Amino acid sequence: MLKKIIVSYFLLMFFTVKVSYSQCAMCKAVVENGNDSMAEGVNNGITYLMVFPYLLIGVLFYTIYRYKKRSKN
Image (cartoon, rainbow, N blue to C red; front, top):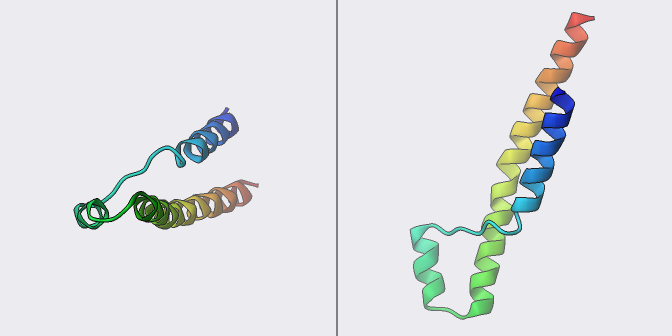
């Protein structure tokens, strides 16, 4: 059951990253003065930077899960 929840959460997070673009106030001000390709580049950069904290937290939780599973045996 827990494995299904984790897999479904990962798939949900993976497929919604492409459609969830956001900008901070300063990035929005810079992009409003630029063209569309610049705006798309800023959005892609924000998404790229957003992925790494989630990956680090995922690795941390996986390591804790694996450690606890081994300690029970």
